[in-house]
Length: 333
Image (tube, rainbow, N blue to C red; front, side, top):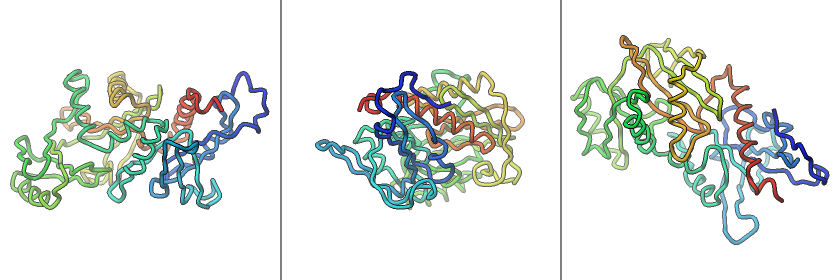
């Protein structure tokens, strides 16, 4: 349900310039159609520009009326806007793709948005901090220290380089290099002999850190999703026999009733980095014991379960409009 003004402005709606929403998402979903017909409380229409990190350049200054300009080389999807380069001045940004991936690093673009102090969901500051897995995991371990078993997190070892990789916990183990993403940069280690081999490989990446954690044989994974005040819970079960299959292989996903303890996980994680309004908590259920252990938390780029995506994108759209309606810059011309 869109937010229409209960007291329309005296001027005709057509006289109000549209508020510009920049959406960074190029892997799925057409945000021009998702936001079609949306208006702010003061009657302003929305102009949605959707593109990818790779297809923008950011210009900012502190001395002109333009302040923030985004060069968009290619709108996405092409059918939603005329497929031509354009320059836009966004009033708000929705970021739904990772800033850092194995093939691209968009932190310089994000830095420009931060310099311009552009409002967004989640906050740009939290998105920047999510670029550093060590920072995220440090916050999760802090919550575990505060909440104990109410927020169970997998034990971890951090090594700033191969020289400090002196893992002495249990085997088999899993190593994760740098800001490992979606199964990439992760390796199962059987014993200390193989760990020695891995340490020699890590020495070839002098600027990378790594994490080591015990390998947990799981019967399934859990994903707890929070968008604003809306919660969902999913279970992912492997059908391919690969230990990373829920990320990189074949898995079956089903929606579950969101248990109170899972809501509590999401609520606790929502408090990190000044507050997260879009997040997912990923956990594993240990085989035999049934123990649940939190593996990671994802922020604004959290993916959606296809069967629920239409409703969840609507929740995100309503959240964006709610935050835009709170901004003087979009309500006062």
